[in-house]
Image (cartoon, rainbow, N blue to C red):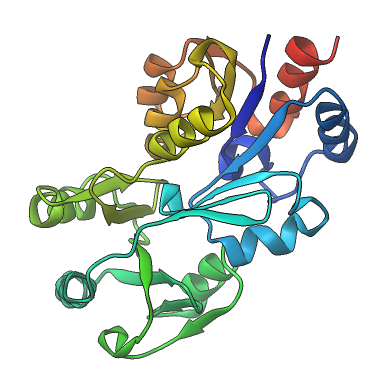
Length: 261
């Protein structure tokens, strides 16, 4: 019996227009009635997620910033703050490479977007975002450094970031244009394991959905692990099951099939 469900947002639960499924409220409330825990697991920050899911803050669990900030039913469960000198080093390194940087922190989201299209891309994922010319001046507890490359980051920017920071930090591809840097050991999967232990749920009782490489560890901690048909090829090799695309309401369909019939 499935007792815990965790789903990624972008490319998974949300369609390409960043919209929730039409039957989301109905499905989630039926899960609550069956005491099945529902977890939103995202690279997005809590300030963004709590706005979108304001009705459910006391009922859901939120794995935010790829596991660096976790809130369980309205209570902060864990937080992992990056060293301030590392944040400044990463900003300077990315500036030399011409990469755009976004700092996800306690008090806001700070970025140095270089044009309107980049600013719009950031605004589509983050609220409370502020543009700054010099991000080394940000005075905040930063949980995640998100690096954006407009031409696609996997082939070039990611490898340079991994070479520079990968030994001491977790450097993850989180999308076609995005690479995220967190403290070592911080992943969606680590956060999911913490939640499983906290509420007494086993691997065999956990369902998870994902589409990109920052979802790998989360899928590995769930027997009912589903890769979206639009997922990165590496995700399809990791997941135990396949489902349809994020534009076909596939997450809700699988939940209804396995948990609500």
